[in-house]
Image 1 (cartoon, rainbow, N blue to C red):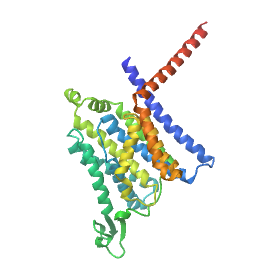
Image 2 (image 1 turned 135 degrees about the vertical axis):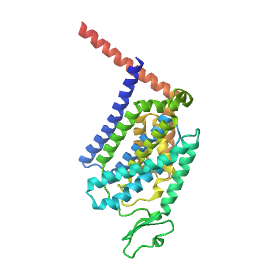
Image 3 (image 1 turned 45 degrees about the vertical axis):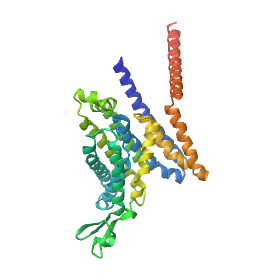
Length: 361
């Protein structure tokens, strides 16, 4: 019976998650085909898709593994810069489809490498070390990217952390990355359908991982790491698996996000973005994939909807956050939701019994 309940809960998570994404995609397509999709709303579609991927990936670390990461935007920026740099340079001479696929793979690989570099030493420790190190890593990476100049000429690539005049290139050389100005002249590619496809692939990967033996080991570590170690679970291995997987997905989201703009700057991926993604995970419910999807959509669209309220915008936004948190976490609201769900289930069960009785009669 317990196994059946677990399977049914897993199936409900699969169904709910994909229904949410399907409804989101269908609603946008209906509005777009009717000609009522404004340019402002269209500009939000790719960021929403990227933030959904970010919220789902951070849920792997915060919700399922039980570790706090405050530098998730750093992995997004690593993927964004690596993927876009390739797409704008080497990818320019390739077929569009091949260049795009390789840009996403390189972005995910770059973020995954940084995930290993950060995770291997830190995940062997316990407590809040991961939060401190990821926060520091995010700030270090942002400042390095803000200072990095890359140029190209017949001699190859040139690097400098000072200015573009220190690249010592030939007169015909081209500056590819301009410090605080980042990468400019990006060939925009990101489309909504690609974002939906990436979200679907992210959901398939994360849900299958969490319903596998490795996923059960990850949640066991979250629930009680001492008990998990006592039954032979390799804590470092499974912690690193969740952390690096989360970083790779963040790298994919970074490439998707970056290819939606003509220029890419490091200041977009600051500490505030990491906190916003963490808020999405917490408000949606840690360990809840459907909740992360809903929270990512609401918290991305809501600030834009409130722009007309001028100086009151952030005040209203803060009130909405407090109300959402109370509704999601306050014991009184939780009990009310449980009673409501019980009534709905009882009503369905009762109607099913009555129908069976009528057929029998």
